[in-house]
Length: 454
Image (tube, rainbow, N blue to C red; front, side, top):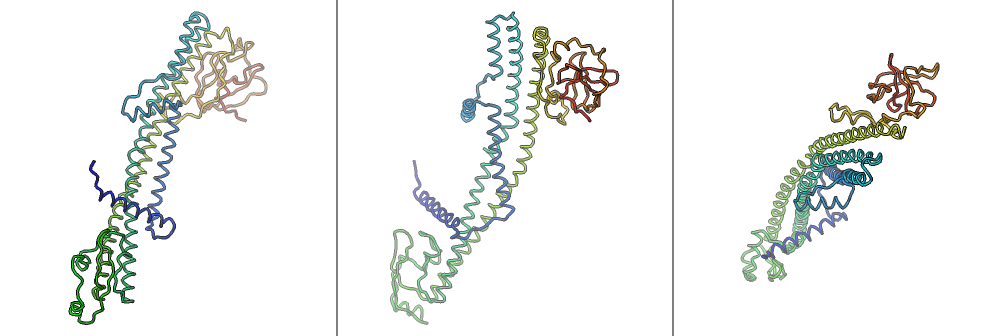
């Protein structure tokens, strides 16, 4: 492999210099170019977006796939750019076990028949879960990953470049400040030895004028030559070592004061030119980084749309689960209600109020899980005839319907959201149900769908 040792050494020197400069800034020993408040707010907002996106992504992955081993396997397949193998969901696996158990224990027995019915429902639930995971991964997880692996990496790269440009700018400012201070010192004290080590880092290449003046290939001039070149006055030559590079030094005679001032002027001009270039590069990089950081607002809009799609897919999934379990509950109640009356009584609390969406896929999900359609009353109440029921003299109340409710049979009263009905209870009646009346219609209504009014 071909190594460029000069470039490697140069990069190492730059890294060491910036590390020292950054450390001095942390301890307050060096000046630092501060960014404006708006830019700092953009940086803080971008960092916050990145951190919370990572947390939401990881927790959503846990929600969709609780098994950590399966998540690691999917991650490896994704990095290897290979298709993730199809995996059986927990519901489908449970359905498989139930079907095998029913086959072995006897599919014609009551237990075997029930196992088969539950297995079919669990299989449908597993298929719905698979569709939900697939939809959520495409519509929600993929955009989050694309932001972290694409846009955020670009932002991080430009921020590192901006940091380097700022360090270069601060170094140029410090260099110009030292050059001007040394020039003033040389002018006031008559210093005849321009010490460039104070203004330039080690191995720094001098400007063309300084290199031509301090040509290390020329021989030191004689006293007569100095006197002839500077008739206004000359000094006895003194000697000093001036490092031009790591391996070459030369004993040189002292320059006269006019020549010294010219060298310092050249040095100051050189530092000012480098400062202008560094300032231009810093401003350009700051503008590029600012535009990328302002693009975080567009990222928020995109993630908001993806969040709506995730909620929509989750709503569809739970709506399917509700329908499948409601069908299963009806089947189990109708087939075994005579043997096990009151066994399948639903006591689940109602879900949150319906969403504003009225799409067919979300309509079922907005319906809370109400009591079962079978076994609603104890055995003594099963033979209750609604036409013979009369409201008590006292104890009737008004109630407002919270959600739509579809009657499962003729003993129940269908409800519409926000309507007012009269309700009352009968002795020995299931506390989860009331008798509701609306006009000349009456029937059992679930308490969880009502808001009782005083």
